[in-house]
Image (cartoon, rainbow, N blue to C red; front, side, top):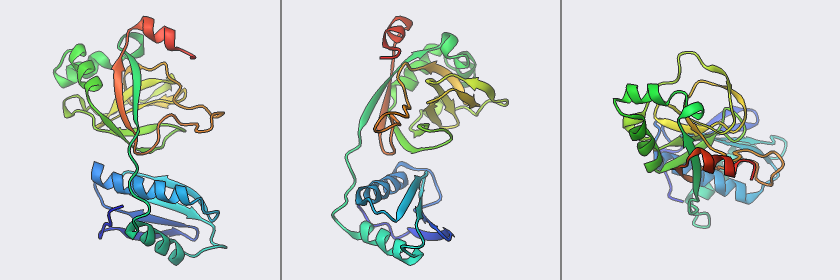
Length: 229
């Protein structure tokens, strides 16, 4: 991994350290976060309880009875300067999406907001390549950057009380897929038949930090054929 001179530590609690790489949202900074996240995961140290990656930072929860804040700082510095843990090749995941209709109730409004047709919004959304910055909000919910600026739009003024699992939405300059039935305020443009989160699977979340994602438009017949496979 490339060493980042601006990296800094904040001792967030008596059992956590926040590693900060910068103050902006960018693929470059997030790549540093994801590289450190994977490097620490690979160590499987028993004193590391949880790792929480974000846009430009990583929160490390540890056992204060086994190590100190200074020990965690030193471990991170060692990983960042070392050559044994280089950035992993990113995984490409393709997600089929049935756009519009009952699955995309906000598609028409988003098209008007963008000064485009619904078909142009679908083409823009499905032509881009996205990066999973981190998981949050709900288990398996991936915050993805790379949304074309032309179709960026603010969240809904009033969130929905119920959003079906698999719904594909846009909020600000990001896109995401709701992994579970839940409330939500993202603008819904379609739905995928893929199961984004399975608590019984060895790796419950379909998407992981650092993954590259492409969306592929499918029709309702193809959607119905893929449900529950």
